[in-house]
Length: 223
Length: 202
Length: 179
Image (cartoon, rainbow over all chains, first blue to last red; front, side, top):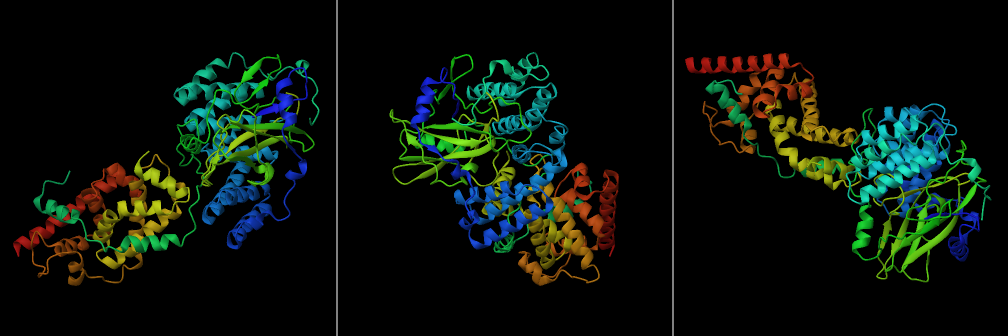
């Protein structure tokens, strides 16, 4: 899966392929007028109750709706769909305790996923505070993925927190994730792989390290 | 352990004997259990029950591999980086960004989804961007035959998705993207992948 | 991952039948404790049903590093206590019919090493806390530390209770012997 950029001088092959592939209009992303109609009546009722509770509680409702749709698409048993939606709702309440509510939607969902993968609340809470300009979503996505791949929860969360506190940027988290994934795929113990790569990183991580803007060209918002 | 008193030992020995249990007792318990809503994983202050998978691939990818539906190739689509070098593997999942506090909805990128599935009859991508509708976003087989792809305009931010791989015999499997970060398991069975769409220049 | 933890995971993923495996694995042993503790089958079955129900509802809080049996027993011990408290003023005598259900031989409850009903009578005479401590130590064969975690009592309090239970049993034997 890759990003297609409009910079012709760099993406000849990719651009050609991309243009040849059907592109779907943004209209697809608009909400279906009644997406919950895919659920049976009882399940739908239970899900709507949970969504209503979330609305009253002031936590995001769209992830709950999407979780229900995901469950319907996967033909999961009704009880499991309801349990999954409820689980997201409860996790959102915990996210608010850990991080507050000043999050964008991606930060909410990545924090929910971090909790669902087993990261303890107090570990998540260490990310609290001003994180504007910092890649909170990316850090949490990497942490969640590493846990899924077998890194023990406490090792993953402390490693990511180390990088976070040293001001690692998107590129650093991406590089770390890429390298650790490759190490795991080539048979390394996940926890060991992560620790070794983190040892490599502190030297290269400097506060505010990101790809310097000078080497970037302005992007069109669509291509 | 037992106090060396024969009487006490006798009582203990007798009390330790198994008691006969009504054969239907377990059934009665389960009948009551089935009336209950499913228990939900509740986060405790100190973590909860999750066993991290040691497999780098999701189990369903493994199954799909075994079924011959998909293949994991070294090539999984490539992109050209800033320096003009070819780089293989993995999604540009972490496009660098100035990290806007909100992924603004007017910031949209084209993301290309690729899956190697030489024996599939059809493949679709499903995710939060198409309301998990398996009919909404079919992928196209490339001329070489083994690779499926589709390009989508996605708003900036985190998205969760998976591939639905359909065999000629009507079988259908949900498959995570082998080279993308994994979303956590959440009881719905099939695994999901995560893509982060950057909000600005990469 | 232990079988127990794996089955718990399956239940939390929606597989209710995996819970039947857990119940099956532990029912008999829990039944033995409940019957010895409460002295009759009906109360024991009530306690067992509410134990497994509460355990099911609380599964989301079970953590893999806990031994499932210990976690389950904590619930069982508490269920037996609250049930006993609710019915403490009602005398339940361990009747011969129940002894039949338990496969005990149909004979008069004279002193005999093989008479299960007799053993239950003897246990019933113990104060509930002493009986509980005795059963956990000598029937369930737990360590004092495990018992402390289960009951919330301190190790030394538990040692004292076990000792007093044994003392009482010895007194009873001496009374029988001397009769």
